[in-house]
Amino acid sequence: MNFDFSDDQKLLQKTAREYLSEHAPLSLCRAVLESAAPYSETLWQGVAQMGWLGTAIPEEYGGAGFGRLELAVLAEEVGRALAPIPFSSSIYLAAEALLLAGSPAQKQTYLPKLASGEWAATFAHAEQPGECGAAAITTKFAGGKLTGSKVPVLDGAAARFAVVTATGNTGVVLALVDLTATGVERTAVRSIDPSRSLAGIRFNAAPAELLGDVGAGWSTVQAVLDRAAVLMAFEQLGGAERAFEITREYCLSRYAFGRPIASFQALKHRLADLYVEIELARSNAYYGAWALSNDRPELAVAACGARAAASEAFELASAEMIQLHGGVGYTWEFDCHLFYRRAKLLGVALGSAHHWREQLMERLGA
Image 1 (tube, rainbow, N blue to C red):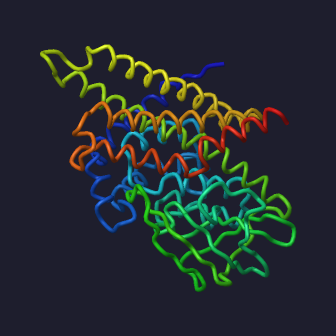
Image 2 (image 1 turned 120 degrees about the vertical axis):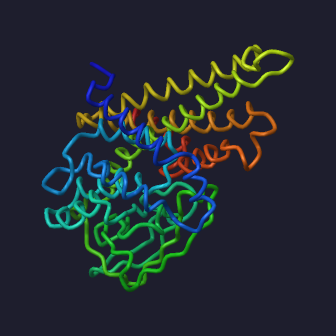
C-alpha cells in the first residue's frame, strides 16, 4: 500500500503552487474579504482555464477525467493559498452529488458548466446553525416544487444552481434548483470569514428536479458528505501547513535578548507539537484519499478520521500562529487572522470535528 503521490501528481502540485503563488497571494484573500464581492471572479476563471475544475469530471462531460487523488493535490494547494473561490462547494459537493446520483441528461447539462467555470454551484443542507440530520430537514419537495429555507449555505451568493436536501413522499431526497429562477430568494449572511460568502436561501415553490433514485436520498447525502470531507481535509491541511511555515519563519527571524525566539524551549515545544498535529492530519487525509480514489468500503471510517484531524490541526495552527506572532498577531495588518477565519469557517462547513468523531464511533460500532 503506497500512501505517497506519484511523480506526475507531485508535478501537478508544483505547478499549482507556482500558479497560486503568482495569481492568489494572501492579498487577494484580503481584498475579497474587505469587498462586497462573494469571490474572486478572476481567480475562478484562471483555475478553470488551468483545468482544475474538471479534474475529476469525466471527459464526456467536459472534464479532464483524472481521479480524486489529483483533486486532493489541488485541494491542498487551494487551502494553502486561502483561495477566495467556491471550489469546495462546486467541485467537492455539487459535482460529486451529480456524479453519484445524476441522470445522464443532468450530468450533460450541469457538469460541463462546472468544468468550464461558467457556473458555480453549492450544496444546501443545513437549515439552522449546528448539525443537520435527516430528521431535521423540513424543506419540502413535491410536484417539482421546492419549499423551505436553507441557512447557512456556503458560497450561496456565488452559486448559479444548488443541490438541495429536502423531504419527499419517500423520505429524504435531493433536488437540483436553478438559483436564478422565480421563487428563490437569497440573503447574505455575515460570517467570521467574508472571503467565502454565506447565504440564506428561501424557496417559495421554486421549480426543482429530483436528483437520484427515490428512496436513496439520505444514503446519497452521506456519500457526498464523506467524499467532500476527505477533499476538504486536504484543503484544511494545506492551510495548516502554510500557517505553520509562516509562523516558523517568523520565530526564526524575530530576535529577543539577542537570540531568535525560536531558540527558546517553550516555543520549540509548541512548534514541535503543532508539527506533529499536522503530520497526524496528513496521515489521516492520505488514508481517506486512498479509500476515496479506490472506492473502498473503508471510506466511511477514513472520512471521519481525515475530517476530524484536519479540522483540529488547522484550528490549532491558526490559533498558534496568532499567539506566536505576539502582539502583532492580533493586528489587522498581519495575515494571521485570515488563516484563523478560514480555519473556523471550514471547521464547521461540513459539521464540526466533534460531529465527525461521533460519526466515527457510530460507524466503528456498526
